[in-house]
Length: 529
Image (cartoon, rainbow, N blue to C red; front, side, top):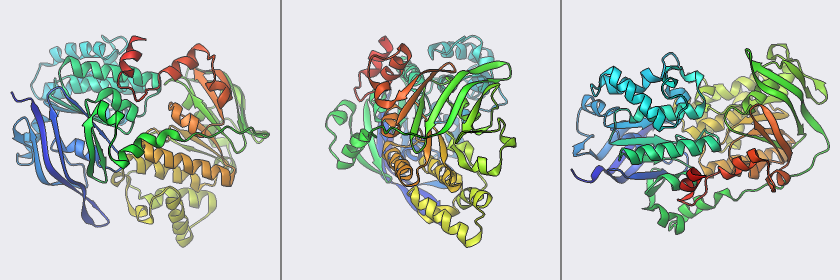
């Protein structure tokens, strides 16, 4: 067999928007050898995911494969029937999505979904496929590999679900896997485990992979070669070590330099929000234990910790979505009602939240203008032309033009969806915004723009932020104070400079040491620690 597995020649892909077709992939070439990993990087909207899906002979709704050649193991996917392409998907070509939570069917057990494609393609009988799935769970370092498959998606953590999805992709032993931002939403310690498990699986089964990401440090660990895309065109391609050491194109150099934003922390006199000795539970399972946090007016408090540490649960208590069993939430010195339903419209308006998963946070049937317009009408009474003008202003704030008001969420990139969610929160004109991993799905250029925007708004409006994140670079860029959480408890809190200065408590040291670097050998060292 030839070493060349995938050969994409002069591929052109059109997208439909503004009532016309226009090119979004503009004559790109891509080659991939058996067992090789190619990293695709670039800004949101560069065409990374569109090109990755095209490697399966697939175009997402609103797109079409216009011209070019896509040769997979000697077969031109542009010329064969859709039935023949479908026969390859799930058997010889697999796809690992960015959001495992959105990709799994919540009504079916993990193991049933893991083996579904393998069984349907007739590659193994169900009993054999299930035993193999358990072996894959063990290879992916999942806990209780013999039984975890009998859980439902909501009964495992995000990191475990992402590894289960990789096991699902590996079940049929495909020749090619497209990884589409598979660790974006994971905390740093979980990301290390998932990256190591994926790299081990790819190496063990000699599987070729296209690894799509905006995280340069992650692609440095996974890829043999890196291809940079921008506006649907190739900017540069080189071996990983060569590109990391000596990027040639000015745009590539700009990607390497974007993580330089660092905000000096500023002290504040007034406290806008405080949690006092809060204990909370889901049913009978306690999840927060005696948590006390204070948020200064006009400043940013970053809450960091692993998946399951209680970060998002703390946000749910603050917003009234999860009433505490003990303790209180005070805003401007006034105790807030524990439950959301008991809070006044004014109390609801003053605290807004931006959710991590933009895909599931917006109604797919509503246009952007409606999504942003609802809080404008509900909280500020804006209707008609006044509402349209304010929607246009908010879109401009998040660096999108007013034509986006007529688009549906399905017509937006991941980064654009998250920016719409930010605009929706700003529409209420709040005093405090809780940002739950709001930049995790964005490329680093857009991340920097969003962080600068949030800092600008804070300086101009005096808005306060609680910033829930696993990205230490984001903490350095935006935080004044840091709260470190572990297993529902506050490990330490204080000014950013104090938290980042050694000596560190053991758990804080673990978080800091789990942040990938641009060294291609970092992951190997992390696995050995």
